[in-house]
Image 1 (tube, rainbow, N blue to C red):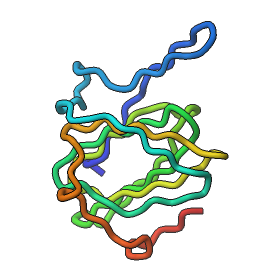
Image 2: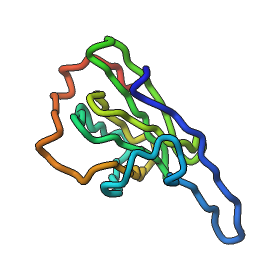
Image 3: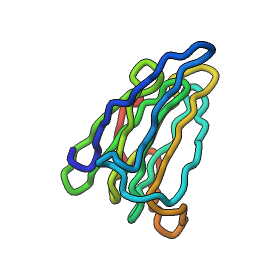
Length: 137
């Protein structure tokens, strides 16, 4: 799917705790800065479906493990990615891409979104979870 890009990220081992890179302004996926926020997802909880009409999301899981599912109505295609500490990367999601996610780590996982515009509830569309058929198991 050309609306979802996966980028490897560096983990730097250090005494007392590792350093996890997220996004630099020199990265090709950097599209400007609007805001950064964290979203907590509890184990086996599913948050779906939403899409941003204007926002580009840069999603990183620095703690735990999360399954992301992306769906593009125009292409009728979906992509599934499990990311977290063991598969540390950044997912860049272009506007108008439906997505949802499920927490795979007990008790919870943490998602960082570095977006190119500030949050605006008027630019988000949502669907009920059953409106897009997907087996989350």
